[in-house]
Length: 450
Image (tube, rainbow, N blue to C red; front, side, top):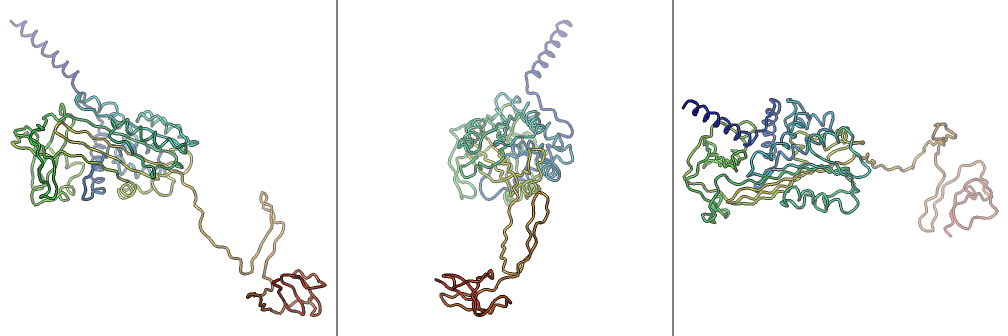
């Protein structure tokens, strides 16, 4: 009997170990990477506050972190410091901690739940004849799996190639990230991140219970999904109610914050940050009635002004912040994100593409006027040596103001001019007045229009 008990205990232990081996393997983060997560989540809320309007909005702060994190390996000086500060890596290891964190997500996030599909992809398209610096290219491949592709941006096909790459890596959700009027054939490069998510609810909604109903105090109509007696993690305070809707095995989840009556979404958004959003106050509840709208949201958002306002203006201005990217004075000429979400009774499908256009700073020519209407100095010199061959000044010649065929003349003070003789303006004597133009006679300047 004892042997049988021991044998059963051994078999049970083996089964537990096997289950752990076959189960999801959590992504293990260093202490610095854990700090980065909190600070990067804080960036997510700051980004959202900066970008939100009174319309539906979807953003992927992680997609921005991947794209900027990759580019940050080519930044230096103030620009790198600003990017580190915005993404939250400034005090926890800088660009290198972003690199290692992104590498771990690339390796692990797709294997955490067999019922949830998550994919992350990065790429770089370079305009000929520009070339990435070797160290940057190596880091882009090592940490982000980016395999830079060199193309002639003026070939009429590159925009289609980029858009097709985005479509391929978002399961067709985002077919066009660069519109025709947004693509720049003179750009140095385009850096891309694509993030795709598709998760099935752990507890699905019954489509037969979905009903069309009012939303936002009868200001809109929605397809409202409904569920009776579901078990969920839930919390409530004076500001909001919050519920966690898990996908698949629970590794991925949606957290919803619903303002209490008398509070607004502005109130909630103002209070949430990288730490407060994920509290330990959630408890398992039996939710007797759950109503949640079925919806789709698409966002096409320019990020230049938003990222400047968040604290990294130098990346867009001046053109001196990316000396480790490729030769020349580079700056971010355009930055945007396209995102889309579909949420229904089965689950959620969401994707985002972040694109960064890199441009080369070209010294612009200042405007000026040069009107030599007063005495001036001049030289004639040889350029390679700088030696002056001639030097002189010009003080002005005697002139006549011509109005039609009428001629106003001024007396010419010249010792060589004789009143009874005719001269040209070079002082050469003429036998007869010229057929046309200025000449001097009788000590006066005259003009013949014909």
